[in-house]
Image (tube, rainbow, N blue to C red; front, side, top):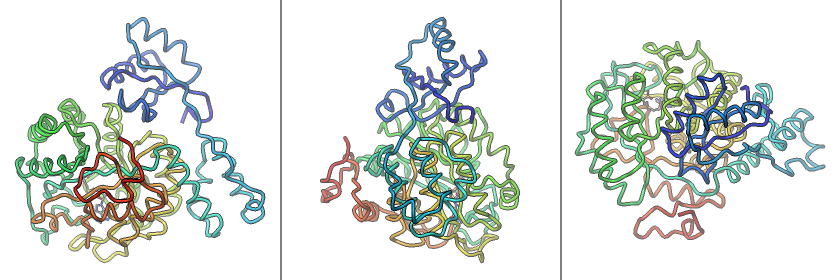
Length: 446
Ligand code: SAH
């Protein structure tokens, strides 16, 4: 928050351990820092940059020099300015408040909570259309037209917790439990590598059988055999465990906060504490992970204000990947008979999150795809830029039923979504025979 509106700089390190060293050194010398995604052109050097304010620039440079640290670069962090959001005609149709918000977006100024609530709540058609068009434009300018494709392996559905919305809570006796072996996981990883994917997501319930040693072992094996990037989504762990996984080679971590309303958090998570989950997310960031969070739309008692609070949390925590999915009831869970979350509100949240958080990964979530085949396309048009394939082997898939009727998004579904979404491209790293579709021929980056 201390960076709002002020001029600031990004320190680019040569690699992530140097980035962490720089961050520590500056903090020790009372310089406030923030860890933020590096601009795309620097992403290959180190994905995270250390952000400092203008007033600390000279002091920071001196400290780095004294410590003998040669950074890759120090650049001004420029605001994203957008011209031409408002034309004269629009000014006559939409409210004054809405025009005020658009002006802030044009100037690259930060939005306040009441602005975000307004964008989430307005029911004026012209305003809604403008919100989606703006999100799409910001998506294009910050992360481009390519839709990143990742492959997910849900390697265990054992869970020691009982989150009320989730279908694989430990006490749900209707679930057939499974755990994949390291070899079974590797088979899928090799398939993902063979179709050119660069990132594998390993997700599971909180299964203590999968000790840190076992997780470290699979991370190392994937790294050594394929060199793929690894995203973990295995729940709450200690700082030391997250550190071990990072050292072993995991780069990304998904740990959704689910909701920032503490009362709702407590109600839906009988085994969890909000501050502990928050602490985990802070540790992940501190350790230099590309840090994933997200929320669920349509939780009992959740308001628009709560969702606005979630979006501010993503921004202020410098979250890099934001998964936004509607709640979907799951058989045998405490919320089995609750209604699912609203698709339109989920899409609006995607759009407003893109407008507020700008250069982040936003997946078009499986939960959305599960409510409607086309919802995945709508999310891509609303600001999303990533699709996660479900690559869990057939015999286990239907047992990873965190909610009912889960869409098993496959390559075909992903290609369909990218081709149906306006002007989007498949990544050029995808290598699938017969998949030289129009979408891919249109371009993509290498
Ligand atoms: N155990 C891991 C992975 C959980 S599953 C963890 O705690 O992080 C991944 C995500 O699925 C969760 O973070 C949650 O946001 C989502 N999810 C689970 N059950 C859901 C449901 N019934 N409806 C919508 N999303 C759900």
